[in-house]
Amino acid sequence: MHLFGPLTVLLLGLLAVSTAQAASLRCGSALITRDDSTQEVLSKCGEPISRDFLGYRERLDIYGFHNEIAIEEWTYGPRNGMYHFLRFEAGRLVSIGSKRGN
Image 1: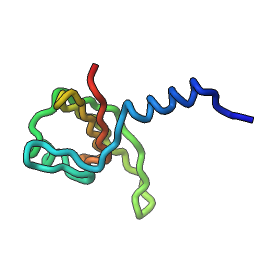
Image 2 (image 1 turned 90 degrees about the horizontal axis):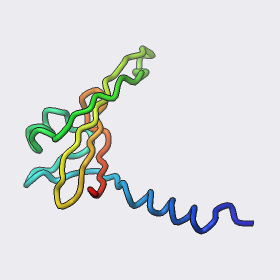
Image 3 (image 1 turned 45 degrees about the vertical axis):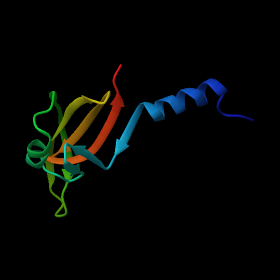
Image 4 (image 1 turned 120 degrees about the vertical axis):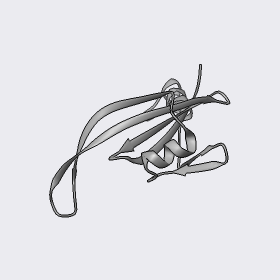
C-alpha cells in the first residue's frame, strides 16, 4: 500500500527545492558562516534589505537557568535572482536559507 500519491510526492519535492539551507554565504569576497555575530555579518555583507524581529525564545543554559533570547531574520537580495534569509538567535547566526525570487 502506498502512503503518498504522485501529486503529494511532487509537491514535497517542489517544497524541498524552493527553500535551500546553506552553511555559508558569500558577500563579495567575504564569507559568513553559522555562529558569526550580527556585527560580523554587517561588516561583511552590509545592511540587509529588511530586518524582522521574530520574538523571543526561552533557552536553558548549562547551569539550569532559563534565559530569553531574541530571534531576528535578515533578508539580503536579490543576488542573481536569489533572496537569502539569515536567522539570528542571541546575536549569533544560526541558519542561512535562500529562495529564488518571483
